[in-house]
Structure formats: structure tokens, C-alpha cells
Length: 473
Image 1: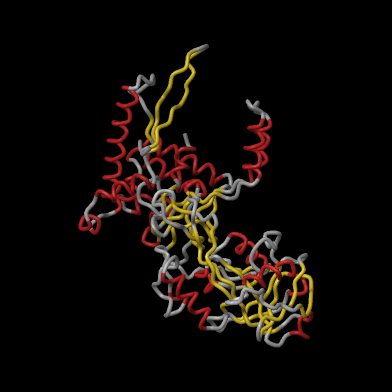
Image 2 (image 1 turned 60 degrees about the vertical axis):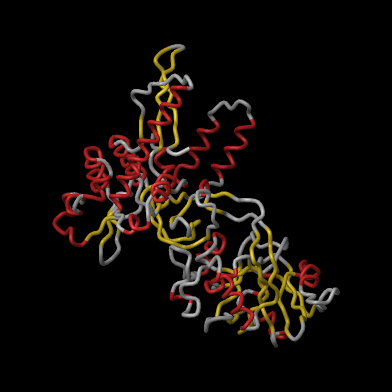
């Protein structure tokens, strides 16, 4: 439903409850609906403010239609005084709530991998993803040539390679390490004219996969066995670039359930990869743009290719040309899709605003313990959700929504997000609505303490996740 209706209960006394209906009026669904109604020429001339005007009109019209339907159904509510998240008073209250979170140390800006929708060109939260049945990825097994072996591998170093597996071949340009589990058993095995490092428990499975045209498992003679920690320090050559990377210790996410037991690590394209990269100070390389196309960082031969189509194929071809491809095979698994466009998403490192729950996680858990659940099993569902709740990416690269009231210094990129600056924007929004953020001169949007050097600042272009709107009521 778009916009999404809500109801708020307001107690009037014992046995009396009044329902105040309300609607979420911002967000990507409405923006997409508006864009779908425009012709190509109209889209070319569209500005942020003209899009917002059309989105507001669409939202208000939809609210009226839904309101009429609810009344026709006989729903009792205070239909004359609903709350709409596009009203200036609500928007100002939302910015006030955001400011309180900033002051409490719960809001920060960071660069790390997030779910990114190339089809919508925005970051997405977990709640905005769906996992349709039947998704099949093009997975590959690859072998990276060892450059310098660790002490434990020196006696088997000739023609030695590090075997990895991935369901996202397009992330190969961003490979900066291979991670192993310190506690797992690994083996150096013979495979044709090369030697491969693989997890010992996976040798039977890999022998069957690498059999080629023969029906018999590929011969894999074990030459040496070591623990994962003995592999650390080994360096290898990247198949595409003049880049030397190393084997590092990962975590418990490295298992022998699939793959090779050694994990291709691209810190700019995965959650575990990012965490491992932090431990070793690895670069946050993500050579992919907003549309899901390779950038210059990936090289001229990949530049402009879509990572989910011809870019993926190009990486597979490059692996084969480099002699690094062991096997390509289809792999059916759960994969995130944008629930609005119904198209696949990617993990991609970008600069975003996040809400951290670390400072009040304990307070939330204590509050849960003070609630009587009917049935009691409900507590067992919500408590693990809070315990495992990661930071929430609240910024969206859209025009229709409540703007994050931040300014950036043109030279340093420093963010201006203070109690004074937020309160100044809040007062403007209360009087004029959030369109003012897009229409007014930046000098007037800046707080008095920064208006004299307004030429040095630019306004932020991100809006808040629409779920932030809902949670601000």
C-alpha cells in the first residue's frame, strides 16, 4: 500500500479509545510511482524540487482515496485530523528526534559495505530486501599463484596455489586477501600440474567437482597437512593486477560446509570481509558505481561493464585467460533482491549515515524483560533480534523524503551536524516544510555561526530511510 496507513490509539478515559489514522507519505515507492508516470522528456527536465512536488501531490491524492475507502468500510477513526509524515510539524519533529540521537552519540557517518540497489541507485535496509526462490549465481573456483609461502609451506612451494570459491565473480577485482580459519585442518594436494591449498575435509567434495569430463573423481594426493594458522603470512599474486596480497585469519564464518575452506576476501563487498579487513588494515576497495558498473579502478577492460551481467562474465573470462579458473558452475541459493524493483542487489562500500544501537542495546533488553508477552514465546523472538541488531543504515540516495540536515565543507568534506545547525533547520522546516531544504539558499539554511562563510559549505543530498519516519511518531 502506498502511502502506508497507520493508526494511533489515544485514550480518552476508562473504556474509551479514539483512533487517529496516519500515513507514511515519503519513501522510494512513491518516488518510483511518480517516475513511472513521466515521459522520457519530462524525466530529463526533472529537478529534485519538481519531483518532490509531484510526489507530494501523489501522496495526498492516495491518502484521500484510501481515507474514503476506510470510511466506506465503516472504520471508526478521527478522519478529520489524521497525521501525515509530509506535514511540516511532523517533519520538524522527526528532525528533532534525529538531533536527539546525534546528541546522544547514536548517529555517525561511515564507509562500509551496505546492501545497494543498482536498479534504485540507493542503499537499502534489511527490511527492504526479499529473497525470491530460484535464484542461481555463477559461482567459480579459482587458484591464486603463491608468491611467498609461509614457513610451514616452504617445502611444497613449487607451483603452489591458493584455492578459493565465490558466488560473485565480479568482486574479484576487489580481492585484497584470502581468509582462513585458524582451527581448521588444511592440506596441500596435487591437482594436475599444480598444488592446491584446500580444507582437508573438503578434499572428497572437490575431487568430485574437479573431475572434468571424466566420471572419476580428480586425483588429489595429500602432500602436507597443516592448521589454518600455519598458512598465515603466505602471499599470493592477483590474477588481474600487479598486486600481492596475503592469507589472513578470518573467523567462525569460515567453515567446510561449502567452497574450499579459504575465503576470497574483498573488504569493499562483504560484511565478514569488511570486519576481517579492519583487523588487518586493508583498503576498502569498491570499484563499482551507483548504477552497478565498474569504475576506472577496476581497469580499462572492465570500465563501464555491469557487475551483474557483462561485468560478471568479463571477470570469469579474465580468470580463465589468466589460468586461474578451476571450475565454474551454477549455484542456487538465497540472494537479496530490491523488494520494490524486484531486481538483484549488491554489497558495496559507500559513505552512509548509520544509527548505532550499541549505546542503548542493554536498555532495550531491560525494557523487553519488563514486558508481559502473550504468548510468552514472543519474548524469545524479539530478544535475539535486539541482541544481534547491527547498525542501521538510515541514509537514502533519494529526493522524496526528510533530508538529513547535514552540511559538508567543500574542501575537507567535514560534516557540520551540531545541536545549533540541526535546531536551525528544524525551525525552518516547522515553518516551511522540508521543501525549504531544496529551495532556500544555503546561507539561510546554515546556522548563524556559519552564515558568513556559506560559500565553503554544501548541503547534503541524502534523505532519511522512510522507516525513520515511522519510528519518529
